[in-house]
Each structure stands twice: as C-alpha cells, then as structure tokens.
Image (cartoon, rainbow, N blue to C red; front, top):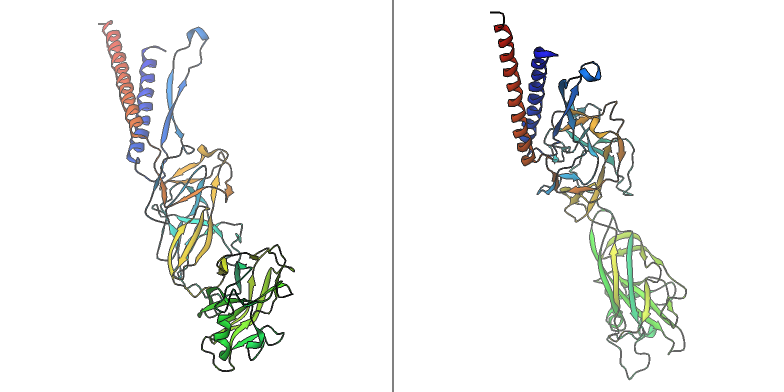
Length: 457
C-alpha cells in the first residue's frame, strides 16, 4: 500500500473519529431531553484485497448504532398527564398537518416515541413537548370496555358529565336476632316485634304495606335504623333515603324469624299521608342466620322520596348479603351501602391511571375512563428511522408495529434521556486521543514523502 495508502488510511481514521465526535456531541447536548435515545458509534475495518501474507490493516468506516431498546430512568412529574412506559414499546403519535374549519387535520401516519411529556392543548388533544399528538383506543363509557381496534388521536371533552339516576342500591347488613328498638322491654315478651294492631293500616299486610303520618312515632319505637344513603333522580336531583327494619314475627312467638324493610317516602307526612313504605318482601331466617328463601335483590317500584320520583330502584343484596346473627346491641350492622347514580358534574382534571387509561375527573366526584393508551413494539427496534423531536418511523428493516394495550404505563412520570454524561466524557477523551494519533500518521507520512523527494536532489 505504501506511504500514500497509509496517508489515505489515516484520513479515513480522522473522518471516523470526527463522525464519532458528532455522536458524542449530540448525546451530551440531549442529555436532558425527555425520552432521548443516544447514538453509539461502531467502527468497521475495510481490508484491501491481497494475498494473506500481503494484507494490511486497511481503512476504517464509522457507522451509527441505535440504542432504542436501552431505557432511561423514570422520574416523577407534577403533571398528571405526563407518562412513561415501564418496559418496552413506544407511544403511538400523529402530527397535525393543517386545519379545516377550525378542526385539526392529521397526517394519518403512525409515528413512535418514548417522549411522554403530554399536556392538554386548547382543543382537548394530548400533545407532547415536540408537538406530536397522542393516539389510543376509545373506551365505551357505559361498559368501560375498549370500543375500537384502530388507534385514533385522543381528544378530551370538557363538557358536563350528564346526571345518572339511581337504578341500583347495593345493600348488605346483619340484623340482630334480638332487636332492641325503643319499645323493647326485656321483661315483656315479644316487645321487640312490630305490632300491626297499633297502626291505622297494617304496615305488613299485603297490598297496604305503609306507615301513615299519624303512626310514625309508633313505627320509630318499634323498628331499628338500617342506614341512609343519598340517591339521584334522572335530572340529578339528590335526595336522602332512610331505611328502617322491623321484626314482625319470631320463633319465640310461635312463628319464624321474619323482618320487613321500610324506606321513608315523605318526611313531612301527617294524618293519613304515607310516610314509610314497606319494600314488600318478607325476610325469613333459618336458625343458622341465613335467609330461607334467599333474597338476592328486591325492587322498589315507582319509588318516590319527598316528592322526587326515582322510578324503579333495585336493592341488591347479593348472595348471603342479609344475615341474622346475635348482636348484643340489638342494632343493624350495615356492611355495604352504595348506589350507582350521581348528579351532573363539571370537568375538573384528567390523569393517567396505572392501567394506561386516560381518566377524566368531575366535580361530582365521578371519574370516567375516556381512552386507552396503546404502545407499539418492533421485532428490530434499533432499525427504526430517527426523526426530529424524539420521533421514530417504521422501516422495512424494523418490521411493522406490534400494537399492545398491556404495557405498563406510569402516570405523572417521565423517562429521562439514556445518555450517561460520565460515559460520554470518557468516550470524548478516547476519541480526541485517537484523532490526535491519526494526525501524527498524516504528519509522519508527509515527512516520509519529503525524505523520498529529497533523494533525487
């Protein structure tokens, strides 16, 4: 190869080290860039064709090597819409290419990024710091299930959440085997029972099953409290439902342990107006404290409370939700009492939960899942094409995106750059020394050429 070959080889070395220096410079410059993936340098030797005993070291070629599969540290963030992927994969994003009648128009091309510094813009889109829009799958608010299979740009709405009327009350409790209402007297047999004859209308009789206004004081003395809960009409009107239980028969009285459940329909009832309504089911208990027959639910037909119509409301106990065990206090012990209605609510905030779902919070304390964040992985992740803003595009070599909804998404978090400053400075020293050594080869080659030229003088 000779002196000229050595000179040419030295020049390739200088070019290769300059190429490596570009990578080091870019890595250091982006050491604080969210989701940045550093670029490493690989050196490839180029050997001239020659017999084995005449081969020389040859030139060098520098190539880029991606580190897309090398994750950066995940750190906390004060912004609820920031997110990080705890594992493999990329967020799927799109870019805006224009506007049509004030609405954003998108490219329709999937891009991929680990940059999760998303924030809600004025139009309700989740946009990261590089200006790319998050894509996901919509969620059916009625079922909570994903309702589509094609990723679309996520747009949030700040509209009011409509009111939902109560249609179901979940109610579980234990009734005391020996209740102790205000009328109970340990020295008087059956004083724990409701006495139908004390009422103008028998509140336990089929068809009537009500307590009139004039009989309310008596009813309160012969029954025990069973809890209270706020429920909602279809228009969002809120009303408090009070429940009481009265034991109407017992084994000691020659019958079976039987209870009736009542709810307050009119707190201001007087005279013959209906104040309390019997739910209409006899809760009969075996000696072991279980219902026989079992009652998993009962329906309160055309329920009305203080003038607010609630429609048909199902009181759901589930299996073994109502029991009768001994209780020294003689009171009902409620273990579950909740319902499925709520008033209208104003949009308050949005966040990302641990399942990677975008969740909107409203002023009525309701949370609604709006969209599922998806991730994309690749068989050859380091073959993705790098674009501005920490964005990647699929290539033939990377393969098609493999979409998943199972990735671990961390809300209120960000992924740091995977650049290690100390490693980059170490590489910088090595690169600088290698470049300096290359210049010495050029200088030496030049001196040798000068000596060869001096021979002819």
